[in-house]
Length: 53
Picture 1 (tube, rainbow, N blue to C red):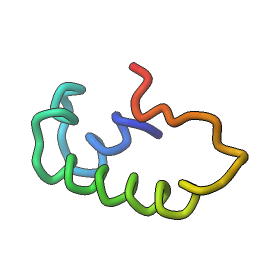
Picture 2: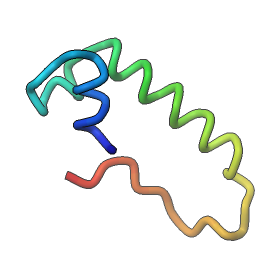
Picture 3: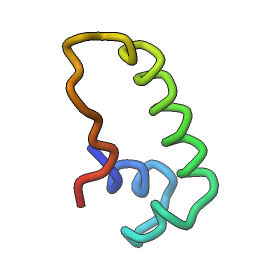
């Protein structure tokens, strides 16, 4: 999963495309929004890690 999965799904090959491709960034932001809105008020969530390179 992670960044490389986004790159593969959009037919790209360069790892840095994750940061530079508008379509990937839009998809990542939409996914992140769904997760955050679902769990933002949960006492079980201590912190959020968006990317671990």
